[in-house]
Image 1: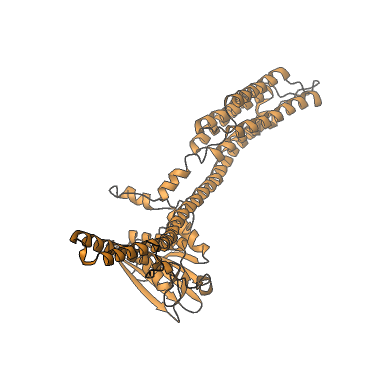
Image 2 (image 1 turned 60 degrees about the horizontal axis):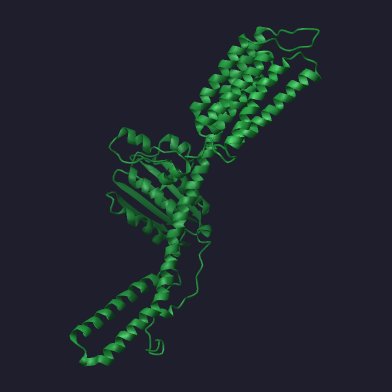
Length: 464
């Protein structure tokens, strides 16, 4: 389920709309045009005005062509986006060549396309664009037209200053690129992980809704089944001894099958009825029943799962939460997967706390997992698989993140550590609730009578 969610959510995670690039380029072209016009006519600097506007016009033509050729909602592939950003770098280099090279203070704008790439494109494309920007900056440090100046003078900055600007571009490209990529990647991972969590919860909710549909179906089918049973009895009474053996056998089979159907429906309907203590099945459960529900699917997997209960006072009762059940089951699954031979569940409670501790005798948590506990895409399964090629499957690192998120939403605290007792080893996960939080949603529902399943009389049946 996790892998399916990951594959569903990642293919278009980086792809940006063409409209975004077009709007950003129009903004850049506006700034470039304003700078050229202001320097030429406002400051009176001697610029190659025509050539500068020819370079700016090439970007305008490209923008217009893209706007005409593609719709505004079109999403660019990684290669297409990288080519557009590379064009922007080359276009900026052309303008800087005409206006003083790296002596022009606007040379730091080389960082802009690299920064955009770092936030939207894979690292290899960002590296290629960074190398292109640094390469063109190196060329401009050596070959360029003079820096435009007033008509009555000329300025030539020392090469040491130009070298400092080149170094600033190099370091700025490297630092901002890595920093922006790291921040954007963490945001993307968190968004995908949360989307995967919602997908898992939606599927769990669909399963929970089936319980209600089953109870509703049992309620509605009770009356027609009772009518069929009544009609079969009437036919048997009317025919009596005169009925042929074949008809008598068919009527007996019909009654048996109706009884069987009513028995099945009674079991389905009992899921919504109260027990003797006024609790609702699958809605309100004791702490012990919750633990047994977690452990039952694991008993046939070859790893001994031991349950230890230590309680002080009455056993706590909680309302069944599919999210918490999923999170606890995920933790127990991991313990069984990594255990050598034994897993221990310690269920404890008192007047203040409710605690569930999962211990295993496996290798324990690696240091990187403990340091980044609860973050998405932290896993050791792929590493273990590389050490054991015969092992099937691998982890995406979402399981622990989803489990921690779901459990902490219920008001619990989750602690991950390794067993440090002498002569023992393995991982330890402890989930702790304040008792009043654990029991806060317990509601004793009113008893509902399912009259459709009671034996029918002749007054209940439709006229024959």
